[in-house]
Length: 91
Image (tube, rainbow, N blue to C red; front, side, top):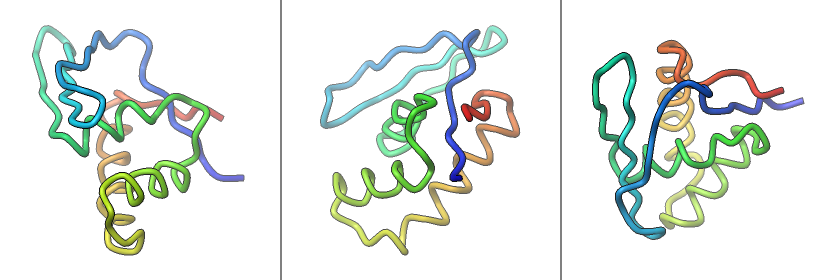
């Protein structure tokens, strides 16, 4: 089974951008963090329902890039957010 990640419930966030150009703002421990467009889209896709492979597939299609090219970046980004306890295992 592939891992599914979900956003930590106690993190306040909102999308300041449009559907095709997301800009997620996070409030964590009284600090504001802004994710770039692709990071914002990955964050929004971490809903506890999609696997990492699903997220990679969606990002590849939406941004018209090869899956092999973005896989390490997406996995590293998710690992970074997980290490910060911003994402949790949604399985």
